[in-house]
Image 1 (cartoon, rainbow, N blue to C red):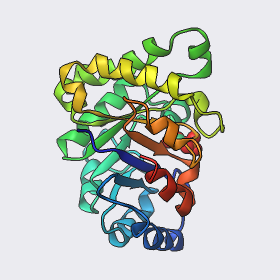
Image 2 (cartoon, rainbow, N blue to C red):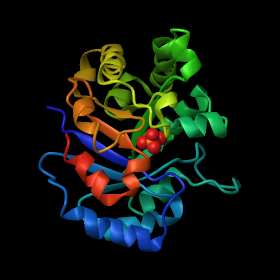
Image 3 (cartoon, rainbow, N blue to C red):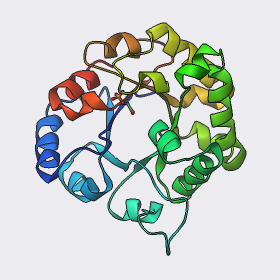
Image 4 (cartoon, rainbow, N blue to C red):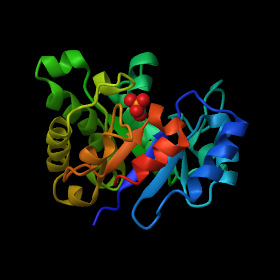
Length: 242
Ligand code: PGA
């Protein structure tokens, strides 16, 4: 019922040559009948990625909550759409922790993305400190509730959610399939009836050798992959693990 989605978050990596080689190599390594694939390159490479990709969706890693105007350094939702993006990451933990994006700001960006026809990939997840204090679900629920309050439940269930425990991002320390499944199931329950069709991705040190056990969990519908998405063979193997 839910087609698996595997997404590549390149973060601040890549070059024009990298984009060209990546898509040439990737396209024939993926079975598009079993998996949907999205790639999130840095802003400056979005146009090139759209040009190079045939069947892979392209998205921005961030967007402004403002429509247009005097906001130096920002990129709007309409600009992302204009260059051919269909998706956008919203509330990645690096945006939250390094650039001060709070739940309200993330909710505003989510609404802006939806209003412009982009599919938001809403990233949520707890820090190690929060997990150890047994606050994982409180944190994740508050992150999602802020978006539901502003955007409405229908908009959230029609989007994609990525559960990314902060302690697992870029650390090589993956959540166990059971830990991830527990949170995914709780998120789906929070979304209510329509949550049955929402894709909930796992992110945080997903690699070619752990993707299959993670993706085999009933409520894990694919992954948001950082480091391992920069090697096309690894990323293709992860896409093939769904
Ligand atoms: P990672 O990053 O796969 O390198 O842990 C995931 C992410 O931040 O989306």
